[in-house]
Amino acid sequence: MASENIIEEKKQGQALITNKKDGNTKLLFIESYGCQMNLNDSEIVASILAEEGFNTTNLLEEADLVLVNTCSIREKAEQTIRKRLQKYNKVRRINPNMKIGVLGCMAERLKTKFLEEEKMVDLVVGPDAYRDLPNLVKEVESGKDAINVILSKEETYGDVSPVRLNSNGVSAFISITRGCDNMCTFCVVPFTRGRERSRDPQSIIKEAQDLWDSGYKEITLLGQNVDSYLWYGGGLKKDFKNASEIAQATAVDFSKLLEMVATTLPKIRIRFATSNPQDMSIDVLHSMAKYDNICKYIHLPVQSGSTKILKKMNRQHTREEYMELIDNVKKIIPDCAISQDMITGFCGETEEDHQETLSLMEYVKYDFGFMFAYSERPGTLAEKKMEDDVPLAIKKRRLAEIINLQQAHSLYHTEQFIGKTVEILIEGNSKKSDAHWMGRNTQNAVAVFPKGDEKIGDLVMVKINQCTSATLIGTRVNS
Image (cartoon, rainbow, N blue to C red):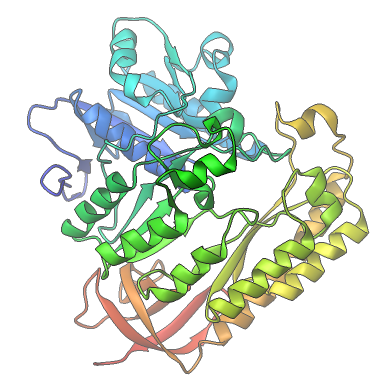
């Protein structure tokens, strides 16, 4: 793997070429928007196309093939994609041989609209059809439009070794599940990524081992819902007639997978995302507590603090059940950081519901979060059967209150590190100063400190002297 994923150093006026392979003559430019799964999918796409003569480039103007990996989770994300497509087509006026394609969730949702109405792309490929890219690219190169948005019940890309795009050489993603069965009423993911299926654990361990052998120090296990991971030989979990059949199978669930990776690679840091409250088991928490190399951080989306709204969202947990899970997290892993996803202004949300969200935030005191005003997504149950009845001005006001409260809680948590010495994995230069390193601790808190003789990828001890709500600021402690 290390021998194949070669990176040419970027010099002034020159391109950065990744996955450079002898004999490859064509150039691929690929951009990703949305979740970490999309980033990982782009790495899979680059790997597949590397076998078809494409190296990847960071210069749009010189590309033979331009692909954008898209997100449909919010309207703003789709607007961003359309602006990028406009940019690509302006460049194509200078480079008329350039071909343009759309990948991912937006491709799956809009399907032929891009080819028939938008007239901005040549190629449309859904998340489960990337293996067909070689054939589709040939069609496009012959002057035809090409599309494949067929969803799969089996595809996991478990045998594809991703090209690590824009990598810092320290952290990498490993996809362990694809799709989602939860059918939240606000979410398009089940329609754009299909049903849940899990990847062979041995292929996950092999990919993690390859990353470690290539010098990576941290991996993040990815899935729309990692807690639903269940391997019993392949296929869909719901193909079993009942739960007892699954129990009788020789199965690996998520807690067992965590233990397998942690024990096989005891020196690599392990993170995971994203969790679903209804599926996170106590066994997962005990695995996290047991192994030091599993980071003490959980991203645990809640979406609302109101049981009434949670029910309308088809979230399979109540406010009280979520709070009980939080209590277990803090009991079993006392130093665990917790982050949230929150949607404000969902259909029928009252001021009382909003206050319940704020009070839940006060109860949990999240370390950080991702907060949004509800935007109606075409094709979802909420769009079909519920009225988007919260005025925009109220959504904005409630969102501002949620963000302000989260900033206060984030500052509270970073202040707890002042005076303490924490282990930091160096990921690269600070965004604000080349004289400082940037890295993260096990709780996923970002830290910066002055450079010494350390290097990227080192684990170092840093004493925290001050902070902001988002960043720890410290000095290296010599060991």
